[in-house]
Length: 377
Image 1 (tube, rainbow, N blue to C red):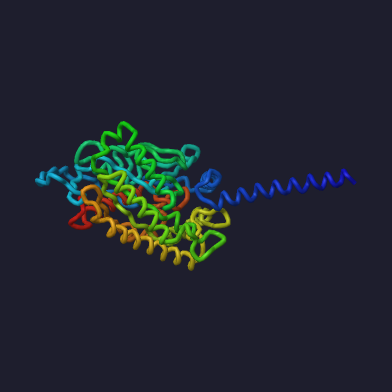
Image 2 (image 1 turned 135 degrees about the vertical axis):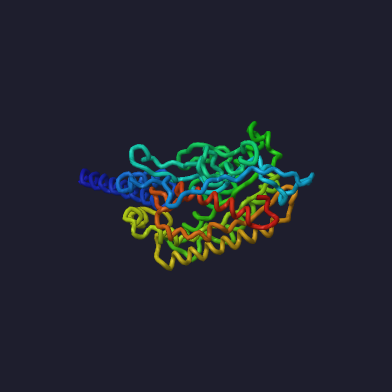
Protein backbone atom coordinates (compact mmCIF):
# COMPACT_ATOMS: atom_id res chain seq x y z
CA UNK A 1 0.00 0.00 0.00
CA UNK A 2 2.78 2.41 0.95
CA UNK A 3 4.65 1.54 -2.26
CA UNK A 4 1.51 2.26 -4.32
CA UNK A 5 1.02 5.64 -2.65
CA UNK A 6 4.68 6.48 -3.21
CA UNK A 7 4.39 5.55 -6.92
CA UNK A 8 1.20 7.62 -7.28
CA UNK A 9 2.89 10.59 -5.58
CA UNK A 10 5.90 10.28 -7.91
CA UNK A 11 3.68 10.21 -11.03
CA UNK A 12 1.72 13.26 -9.84
CA UNK A 13 4.95 15.19 -9.21
CA UNK A 14 6.23 14.22 -12.68
CA UNK A 15 3.12 15.57 -14.40
CA UNK A 16 3.22 18.75 -12.33
CA UNK A 17 6.78 19.35 -13.49
CA UNK A 18 5.83 18.72 -17.14
CA UNK A 19 2.81 21.02 -16.89
CA UNK A 20 4.92 23.66 -15.19
CA UNK A 21 7.49 23.52 -17.98
CA UNK A 22 4.73 23.83 -20.59
CA UNK A 23 3.28 26.85 -18.80
CA UNK A 24 6.71 28.52 -18.64
CA UNK A 25 7.23 27.81 -22.35
CA UNK A 26 3.78 29.19 -23.19
CA UNK A 27 4.41 32.36 -21.20
CA UNK A 28 7.78 32.79 -22.93
CA UNK A 29 6.22 32.44 -26.38
CA UNK A 30 3.33 34.74 -25.54
CA UNK A 31 5.77 37.44 -24.38
CA UNK A 32 7.94 38.65 -27.28
CA UNK A 33 11.58 39.56 -26.71
CA UNK A 34 12.38 36.88 -24.19
CA UNK A 35 15.38 34.60 -24.75
CA UNK A 36 13.06 31.63 -25.33
CA UNK A 37 10.93 33.59 -27.80
CA UNK A 38 13.99 34.59 -29.84
CA UNK A 39 15.24 30.98 -29.90
CA UNK A 40 11.91 29.73 -31.24
CA UNK A 41 11.81 32.50 -33.86
CA UNK A 42 15.30 31.49 -35.00
CA UNK A 43 14.21 27.85 -35.26
CA UNK A 44 11.14 28.79 -37.31
CA UNK A 45 13.20 30.93 -39.66
CA UNK A 46 15.99 28.37 -40.09
CA UNK A 47 13.46 25.61 -40.79
CA UNK A 48 10.77 27.35 -42.82
CA UNK A 49 12.11 30.79 -43.81
CA UNK A 50 12.70 32.11 -47.32
CA UNK A 51 16.49 32.03 -47.29
CA UNK A 52 16.74 33.37 -50.83
CA UNK A 53 15.32 36.73 -49.75
CA UNK A 54 17.90 39.53 -49.81
CA UNK A 55 17.00 42.31 -47.38
CA UNK A 56 19.68 44.49 -48.99
CA UNK A 57 18.21 44.18 -52.51
CA UNK A 58 15.54 46.86 -52.60
CA UNK A 59 12.37 46.98 -54.67
CA UNK A 60 13.33 50.42 -55.97
CA UNK A 61 16.85 51.86 -56.27
CA UNK A 62 17.83 54.14 -53.41
CA UNK A 63 18.73 57.61 -54.71
CA UNK A 64 22.28 58.77 -54.19
CA UNK A 65 22.73 61.20 -51.32
CA UNK A 66 24.64 63.85 -53.24
CA UNK A 67 23.65 67.01 -51.39
CA UNK A 68 26.46 69.52 -51.63
CA UNK A 69 27.77 70.59 -48.23
CA UNK A 70 26.80 74.20 -47.70
CA UNK A 71 28.08 76.18 -44.75
CA UNK A 72 26.65 79.59 -44.14
CA UNK A 73 27.17 82.34 -41.62
CA UNK A 74 23.86 83.95 -40.76
CA UNK A 75 25.30 86.27 -38.16
CA UNK A 76 23.47 84.67 -35.21
CA UNK A 77 25.66 84.80 -32.12
CA UNK A 78 23.46 83.16 -29.51
CA UNK A 79 21.87 80.34 -31.48
CA UNK A 80 18.64 78.78 -30.22
CA UNK A 81 17.11 75.39 -31.01
CA UNK A 82 15.09 76.71 -33.95
CA UNK A 83 17.95 78.36 -35.78
CA UNK A 84 20.33 75.41 -35.89
CA UNK A 85 22.23 74.46 -39.01
CA UNK A 86 23.20 70.85 -39.84
CA UNK A 87 26.83 71.59 -38.96
CA UNK A 88 25.76 72.79 -35.50
CA UNK A 89 24.81 69.21 -34.58
CA UNK A 90 27.76 67.36 -33.02
CA UNK A 91 26.03 64.44 -31.28
CA UNK A 92 23.43 61.97 -32.57
CA UNK A 93 21.27 60.02 -30.09
CA UNK A 94 18.29 57.67 -30.26
CA UNK A 95 15.92 56.16 -27.74
CA UNK A 96 13.25 53.63 -28.59
CA UNK A 97 12.55 49.95 -29.13
CA UNK A 98 13.57 47.08 -31.41
CA UNK A 99 13.00 49.11 -34.58
CA UNK A 100 15.64 51.63 -33.50
CA UNK A 101 17.85 48.74 -32.33
CA UNK A 102 17.71 47.27 -35.86
CA UNK A 103 16.27 43.94 -34.67
CA UNK A 104 16.23 41.27 -37.40
CA UNK A 105 16.96 43.85 -40.09
CA UNK A 106 18.95 41.42 -42.23
CA UNK A 107 18.08 37.78 -42.83
CA UNK A 108 19.89 35.21 -44.94
CA UNK A 109 20.71 31.59 -45.49
CA UNK A 110 21.62 29.51 -42.42
CA UNK A 111 24.06 28.92 -40.87
CA UNK A 112 25.64 32.25 -41.80
CA UNK A 113 22.67 34.42 -40.82
CA UNK A 114 20.81 31.94 -38.66
CA UNK A 115 21.30 34.01 -35.50
CA UNK A 116 19.03 36.99 -35.04
CA UNK A 117 20.99 40.20 -34.48
CA UNK A 118 20.36 43.89 -33.86
CA UNK A 119 21.95 45.83 -36.71
CA UNK A 120 22.47 49.09 -34.84
CA UNK A 121 25.04 50.38 -37.31
CA UNK A 122 22.37 50.46 -40.03
CA UNK A 123 19.44 51.83 -37.99
CA UNK A 124 17.85 54.75 -39.82
CA UNK A 125 18.03 57.35 -37.04
CA UNK A 126 21.39 56.61 -35.44
CA UNK A 127 23.45 54.05 -37.42
CA UNK A 128 27.13 54.74 -38.00
CA UNK A 129 28.16 52.04 -40.49
CA UNK A 130 30.12 53.59 -43.31
CA UNK A 131 28.13 54.20 -46.48
CA UNK A 132 24.72 53.45 -44.95
CA UNK A 133 21.72 55.73 -45.38
CA UNK A 134 21.31 57.05 -41.85
CA UNK A 135 20.69 60.45 -40.30
CA UNK A 136 24.16 60.77 -38.73
CA UNK A 137 25.82 59.84 -42.04
CA UNK A 138 23.76 62.54 -43.76
CA UNK A 139 24.71 65.06 -41.08
CA UNK A 140 28.40 64.22 -41.36
CA UNK A 141 28.36 65.64 -44.90
CA UNK A 142 28.04 69.08 -43.32
CA UNK A 143 30.91 68.90 -40.86
CA UNK A 144 33.13 66.59 -38.87
CA UNK A 145 32.12 63.06 -37.89
CA UNK A 146 29.11 62.92 -35.59
CA UNK A 147 29.62 61.59 -32.05
CA UNK A 148 27.37 58.79 -30.77
CA UNK A 149 26.33 56.53 -33.67
CA UNK A 150 27.22 52.85 -33.15
CA UNK A 151 28.64 50.58 -35.82
CA UNK A 152 28.13 46.87 -36.34
CA UNK A 153 25.60 44.85 -34.40
CA UNK A 154 24.60 43.64 -30.96
CA UNK A 155 22.91 40.50 -29.68
CA UNK A 156 19.16 40.79 -29.04
CA UNK A 157 18.10 42.31 -25.74
CA UNK A 158 21.32 44.33 -25.44
CA UNK A 159 20.94 47.47 -23.34
CA UNK A 160 22.19 49.82 -26.04
CA UNK A 161 25.42 50.54 -27.89
CA UNK A 162 27.17 53.92 -27.85
CA UNK A 163 24.37 56.52 -27.94
CA UNK A 164 21.78 54.21 -29.46
CA UNK A 165 19.96 53.55 -26.19
CA UNK A 166 17.10 51.54 -27.71
CA UNK A 167 16.12 48.22 -26.13
CA UNK A 168 14.26 45.55 -28.09
CA UNK A 169 10.82 45.04 -26.59
CA UNK A 170 10.82 48.44 -24.87
CA UNK A 171 7.54 50.21 -24.20
CA UNK A 172 7.08 53.83 -23.22
CA UNK A 173 7.47 52.66 -19.62
CA UNK A 174 11.13 51.74 -20.31
CA UNK A 175 12.12 55.05 -21.92
CA UNK A 176 13.06 56.50 -18.55
CA UNK A 177 15.79 53.91 -17.99
CA UNK A 178 17.11 54.57 -21.49
CA UNK A 179 17.41 58.26 -20.66
CA UNK A 180 19.15 57.36 -17.39
CA UNK A 181 21.75 55.43 -19.39
CA UNK A 182 22.15 58.39 -21.74
CA UNK A 183 22.62 60.89 -18.90
CA UNK A 184 25.16 58.61 -17.22
CA UNK A 185 27.20 58.31 -20.43
CA UNK A 186 27.13 62.05 -21.07
CA UNK A 187 28.33 62.75 -17.54
CA UNK A 188 30.98 60.05 -17.17
CA UNK A 189 32.24 58.76 -20.52
CA UNK A 190 35.29 60.78 -21.71
CA UNK A 191 34.19 60.83 -25.37
CA UNK A 192 30.74 62.16 -24.52
CA UNK A 193 31.74 64.47 -21.68
CA UNK A 194 33.78 66.44 -24.22
CA UNK A 195 30.63 67.24 -26.22
CA UNK A 196 28.26 67.51 -23.26
CA UNK A 197 27.46 71.14 -24.06
CA UNK A 198 27.24 70.77 -27.86
CA UNK A 199 23.95 70.54 -29.75
CA UNK A 200 22.50 67.03 -29.93
CA UNK A 201 19.93 65.53 -32.29
CA UNK A 202 17.73 62.97 -30.52
CA UNK A 203 15.20 60.71 -32.25
CA UNK A 204 12.40 59.26 -30.11
CA UNK A 205 10.46 56.41 -31.73
CA UNK A 206 8.31 54.40 -29.32
CA UNK A 207 4.86 52.89 -28.89
CA UNK A 208 4.63 49.80 -31.11
CA UNK A 209 5.09 47.40 -28.19
CA UNK A 210 2.51 49.29 -26.13
CA UNK A 211 -0.02 48.76 -28.92
CA UNK A 212 0.96 45.13 -29.38
CA UNK A 213 -0.04 44.18 -25.81
CA UNK A 214 -3.53 45.59 -26.30
CA UNK A 215 -4.92 42.27 -27.52
CA UNK A 216 -2.95 39.85 -25.35
CA UNK A 217 -5.03 37.38 -23.35
CA UNK A 218 -6.82 37.91 -21.12
CA UNK A 219 -8.18 40.60 -23.44
CA UNK A 220 -9.37 43.67 -21.56
CA UNK A 221 -10.84 46.90 -22.82
CA UNK A 222 -7.54 48.73 -22.53
CA UNK A 223 -4.60 47.41 -20.50
CA UNK A 224 -2.60 50.03 -18.65
CA UNK A 225 0.43 49.25 -20.80
CA UNK A 226 -1.48 50.52 -23.85
CA UNK A 227 -3.41 53.38 -22.21
CA UNK A 228 -2.91 56.64 -24.16
CA UNK A 229 -2.86 58.79 -21.03
CA UNK A 230 -0.09 56.66 -19.54
CA UNK A 231 1.79 56.69 -22.86
CA UNK A 232 1.58 60.48 -22.95
CA UNK A 233 2.74 60.81 -19.33
CA UNK A 234 5.73 58.53 -19.94
CA UNK A 235 6.87 60.44 -23.02
CA UNK A 236 6.31 63.79 -21.27
CA UNK A 237 8.49 62.69 -18.36
CA UNK A 238 11.29 61.66 -20.74
CA UNK A 239 11.10 64.91 -22.69
CA UNK A 240 11.34 66.90 -19.47
CA UNK A 241 14.40 64.91 -18.42
CA UNK A 242 16.03 65.55 -21.80
CA UNK A 243 15.27 69.25 -21.48
CA UNK A 244 16.64 69.59 -17.94
CA UNK A 245 19.35 66.91 -17.75
CA UNK A 246 20.64 66.46 -21.30
CA UNK A 247 20.07 70.04 -22.53
CA UNK A 248 21.22 71.55 -25.85
CA UNK A 249 18.98 69.04 -27.66
CA UNK A 250 16.69 68.96 -30.64
CA UNK A 251 14.19 66.08 -30.49
CA UNK A 252 12.52 64.41 -33.46
CA UNK A 253 9.32 62.88 -32.08
CA UNK A 254 8.46 60.25 -34.69
CA UNK A 255 4.89 59.12 -35.41
CA UNK A 256 3.87 55.45 -35.49
CA UNK A 257 2.45 53.57 -38.48
CA UNK A 258 -0.75 51.52 -38.31
CA UNK A 259 -0.27 47.93 -37.21
CA UNK A 260 -3.03 46.63 -39.50
CA UNK A 261 -0.83 47.41 -42.51
CA UNK A 262 1.78 44.92 -41.23
CA UNK A 263 -0.84 42.16 -41.24
CA UNK A 264 -2.06 43.09 -44.72
CA UNK A 265 1.51 42.97 -46.04
CA UNK A 266 1.94 39.42 -44.74
CA UNK A 267 -1.00 37.91 -46.63
CA UNK A 268 -0.02 35.60 -49.47
CA UNK A 269 3.43 34.84 -48.03
CA UNK A 270 3.36 31.26 -46.61
CA UNK A 271 6.20 31.80 -44.13
CA UNK A 272 4.77 35.10 -42.84
CA UNK A 273 1.32 33.58 -42.46
CA UNK A 274 2.93 30.74 -40.49
CA UNK A 275 4.95 33.02 -38.16
CA UNK A 276 2.03 35.38 -37.59
CA UNK A 277 -0.33 32.53 -36.77
CA UNK A 278 -1.00 33.08 -33.03
CA UNK A 279 -1.14 29.35 -32.43
CA UNK A 280 2.59 29.21 -33.23
CA UNK A 281 3.90 32.25 -31.36
CA UNK A 282 3.02 35.82 -30.46
CA UNK A 283 4.78 38.54 -32.46
CA UNK A 284 2.24 41.34 -31.98
CA UNK A 285 -1.08 40.23 -30.54
CA UNK A 286 -3.20 42.87 -32.27
CA UNK A 287 -1.72 42.14 -35.69
CA UNK A 288 -2.47 38.47 -35.10
CA UNK A 289 -5.99 39.06 -33.80
CA UNK A 290 -9.16 39.54 -35.79
CA UNK A 291 -10.09 42.48 -37.99
CA UNK A 292 -11.95 44.22 -35.19
CA UNK A 293 -8.88 44.04 -32.93
CA UNK A 294 -6.59 45.36 -35.67
CA UNK A 295 -8.84 48.35 -36.30
CA UNK A 296 -9.04 49.03 -32.56
CA UNK A 297 -5.24 48.96 -32.44
CA UNK A 298 -5.09 51.42 -35.34
CA UNK A 299 -7.30 53.78 -33.36
CA UNK A 300 -4.87 53.55 -30.44
CA UNK A 301 -1.96 54.31 -32.79
CA UNK A 302 -3.85 57.35 -34.05
CA UNK A 303 -4.40 58.49 -30.48
CA UNK A 304 -0.71 58.02 -29.65
CA UNK A 305 0.22 60.18 -32.63
CA UNK A 306 -2.20 62.87 -31.50
CA UNK A 307 -0.59 62.80 -28.04
CA UNK A 308 2.89 63.12 -29.58
CA UNK A 309 1.71 66.14 -31.54
CA UNK A 310 0.22 67.58 -28.35
CA UNK A 311 3.57 67.15 -26.57
CA UNK A 312 5.33 68.97 -29.40
CA UNK A 313 3.09 72.00 -28.83
CA UNK A 314 3.59 71.74 -25.07
CA UNK A 315 7.40 71.70 -25.23
CA UNK A 316 8.05 73.69 -28.39
CA UNK A 317 8.74 77.05 -26.76
CA UNK A 318 9.49 75.93 -23.22
CA UNK A 319 13.24 76.60 -23.35
CA UNK A 320 14.39 77.39 -26.88
CA UNK A 321 17.95 78.18 -25.84
CA UNK A 322 18.42 74.58 -24.70
CA UNK A 323 15.64 72.50 -26.22
CA UNK A 324 13.75 72.17 -29.48
CA UNK A 325 11.24 69.60 -30.65
CA UNK A 326 9.42 68.59 -33.82
CA UNK A 327 6.68 66.01 -34.30
CA UNK A 328 7.47 64.04 -37.47
CA UNK A 329 4.33 62.49 -39.01
CA UNK A 330 5.89 61.02 -42.17
CA UNK A 331 5.94 57.33 -41.22
CA UNK A 332 2.21 57.11 -40.53
CA UNK A 333 1.46 57.96 -44.16
CA UNK A 334 3.77 55.37 -45.73
CA UNK A 335 1.68 52.63 -47.45
CA UNK A 336 3.69 49.63 -46.24
CA UNK A 337 1.00 47.08 -47.19
CA UNK A 338 1.20 48.18 -50.82
CA UNK A 339 4.64 46.59 -51.18
CA UNK A 340 3.91 43.26 -49.44
CA UNK A 341 7.10 41.95 -47.81
CA UNK A 342 9.55 44.19 -49.68
CA UNK A 343 10.25 46.32 -46.62
CA UNK A 344 9.90 43.78 -43.82
CA UNK A 345 12.41 41.48 -42.14
CA UNK A 346 12.59 38.01 -43.65
CA UNK A 347 12.84 36.66 -40.11
CA UNK A 348 9.64 37.85 -38.42
CA UNK A 349 7.71 39.72 -41.19
CA UNK A 350 7.25 42.56 -38.69
CA UNK A 351 10.40 44.64 -38.28
CA UNK A 352 11.67 46.97 -41.01
CA UNK A 353 14.48 45.46 -43.09
CA UNK A 354 17.53 47.29 -44.39
CA UNK A 355 15.68 48.69 -47.43
CA UNK A 356 12.97 50.06 -45.13
CA UNK A 357 15.56 51.65 -42.86
CA UNK A 358 17.11 53.41 -45.84
CA UNK A 359 13.72 54.80 -46.84
CA UNK A 360 12.96 55.79 -43.25
CA UNK A 361 16.23 57.73 -43.07
CA UNK A 362 15.47 59.55 -46.32
CA UNK A 363 11.89 60.22 -45.29
CA UNK A 364 12.87 61.58 -41.89
CA UNK A 365 15.58 63.74 -43.45
CA UNK A 366 13.21 65.09 -46.11
CA UNK A 367 10.35 65.70 -43.68
CA UNK A 368 12.77 67.59 -41.50
CA UNK A 369 13.81 69.70 -44.47
CA UNK A 370 10.23 70.51 -45.36
CA UNK A 371 8.50 70.62 -42.00
CA UNK A 372 8.29 74.37 -41.32
CA UNK A 373 10.30 77.54 -41.11
CA UNK A 374 11.27 76.90 -37.50
CA UNK A 375 13.08 73.61 -38.12
CA UNK A 376 16.85 73.58 -38.26
CA UNK A 377 17.36 71.20 -41.18
